[in-house]
Length: 255
Image (cartoon, rainbow, N blue to C red; front, top):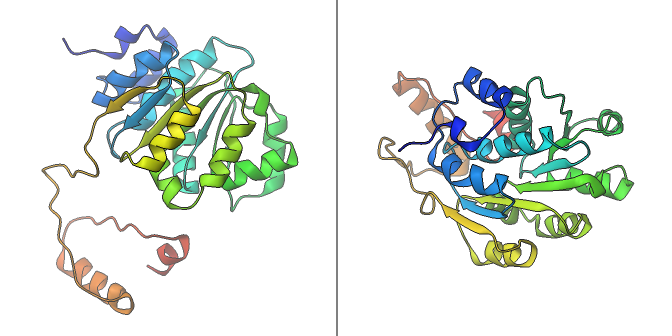
C-alpha cells in the first residue's frame, strides 16, 4: 500500500503546508527517509537530483523543530545557489511555524548575516566557507545545533571542502542527528560517514549518476574557445525551451 504524508504522524499544519505546495504522495526517497529520521536515526542516502531529496530531510526537521523550543538545524550545501534553494523550500514548507531561517553564503553582506544570527534563527542553510567564517567569529550558534544535513556531500568533497567539513563537524555537539546525501557513494564519503555518523541507516535510491529513460543524451566535440559558438548553433536549431548549466558564476554571466 502506497504511503501518504498522513502515514508519518506529521502535524496537521505541516500536512496542510505540504498539500498547498502540491506534496501529495511521497517520493521513494521521502518514503524511505522521513520515518527513520523522525525516529532518531542517522542517515546516508544516495539519491539523484529531482528525487525529492530536499523535502526528505526538511519535512522531519520542521516536524521536530516545531516540537522543540531551543534546538536548531543546519544544512550545508556546496554552492550558494543550492543553499538558497534549500532556504526557499524550507520557508514554503514551514509557513506558520514561527521557525526563523538564516542563509549563510559567500557573496552576501556579512553584516546582514550577523544581524540575522542575532535574531536566533533555528534553521540555517549555508556553504562550508561562510559557515566556517561565522564559527571563527564566534557568531555561529554551534551549541544549539541538534540536526545537521550534508547535501551533495560528494560534490563538496570534489570542490575541496574536506577540511571545512571536518572543522564544522569537530565543532558541533556530539549529541546530534545527521543526514548525509550524495549522488554517489565513494571511499572518502564512506570514511567521513563512518567517523562522524552513528550506525547510520543506508538508503540507496539511484545507482551512481543514472539518467531517467526519458532523457536523451548527446555530446558535441568542441574546444573551450568554441563552446559559445556551438551553443549558439544549438539554440538556433532547437524550438523547445532550453536550460543551460554552467560551472561557475563568471561563465554563467558570460553565457
